Image (cartoon, rainbow, N blue to C red):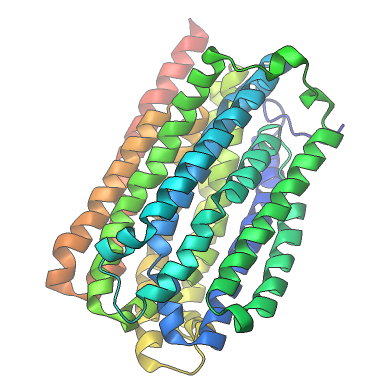
Length: 446
């Protein structure tokens, strides 16, 4: 049987570190090939095609993020049943999550492909880049089934405490993606990197699926465990849909902000694209800490050990704070130079504006760390609705920046939008966590 990690006993800091490092490496590789996609587009196709990809970033995050959120939510009851050692019920959750994933994949893919062009026009995508934006994002949307396949399988594997195996397959996928980028970008233009992304995601998903079938004895199902169960479907939807909505609600604010950036012009879009890709790469440790928090709290709440969750939170925040300081130092002094990676020739306007956004974001990374850690900790405990409400706070903060502050402060309001969103979400999440953890501790002591 493949190796799993039982986080309900032993040193929290040791479990968190050993689980988070493979997740971090996986996130880095995932962002690495996203960054390479953008570098190849900028270097080979120019700044207008770079802006074309950037203009799709927020809508891509909204739709694909919703799918990722749903998959992560489906993993929570699986982690809880694993923590409770109820493997039969865990398998029922896995089989029903599979049926739901197939249905959601078909519905979402069909819907967004039909309305793709209308969405880009509604977002006021500049006329000089809208055709490239459409070609790129349509292919990405058509490949949503491959994205769901990988993320559903990797979510199941991580729920069992194994964060290393998805990393190995993601490395293979990343290298394949880069190779296909270089092979396809010249003959296919902006469509080439999109095809490369979809194909590499599909390969990593199939590898995860094959590995699960061959290596995990506790996942071998009887015929009755494969049947649809309304009880399990309901529980999965109560966890998955709120997390999917959370991603979407958060992204709505990003869509509003992107619309405001689009109205500033394609050079501003290119600046935000370069800064966004760099920032996402530097934010990978926060994503890893968040995913670790979800599995850690899910297993411990399933085992009836809320005290361990408090200990784990302190460790997670400590790691997040140390990294935040280091990341800001790098971005403050080298952010402008890093933005040059995405251009076929040096552009002082894009360099300076990308650097400004990176300094604003980097200075507030501790708040981003808290958003990821506390939100996923709450979700792992089964309180997904509260995580959705935190997304509402983020949406309003970005929406205010896009609707109001950009007209007053111009590009600086775009730079301030993410930090304002993180602070707003943290205000709600910290209060919610304190209430939840007291409630869970009282349950155990009754």
